[in-house]
Image 1 (tube, rainbow, N blue to C red):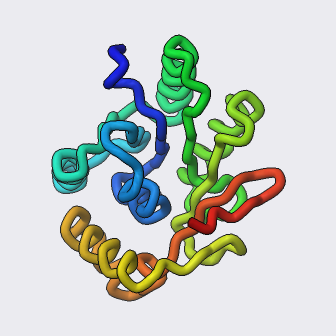
Image 2 (cartoon, rainbow, N blue to C red):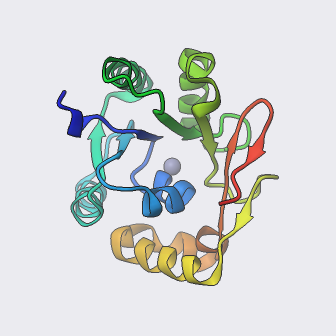
Length: 185
Ligand SMILES: [Zn+2]
């Protein structure tokens, strides 16, 4: 991998809108091209197209891998590449293995934490798409507006989610495990 291809922020998500819902502000505010999202579930044509349109518009690198095993391989590869380049700062974002209710989210978060949590230590973050976690924070008005517009634009097939529950664009939940430290900005 060339230096430009190695991400500094690596997001893991079963489904194409998960990381966007859970970590929108990191994706939005972190510089290009440091971000990559790894998807672990197979997608249909519509959701595959949504993911590639988001990738093109946001300059976020994406990859589809085969389930949890593929995610672990991808993570180990990126840790190796970051080490090779002498970068101490790879940040990993995974679904919260405790508070998420979707089994695919829990399974992925749990597997990644078990595999590398102690290695990447304070650079392992969990995010929630549930919007009912103790570390949830409110987005300011401007960010909520931008997040809503982005969700509508890039993931129209899922819009009934945030049409019926405004917490999807009004809030965000990212934390560190053991002990939890809410990320406040
Ligand atoms: Zn999901």
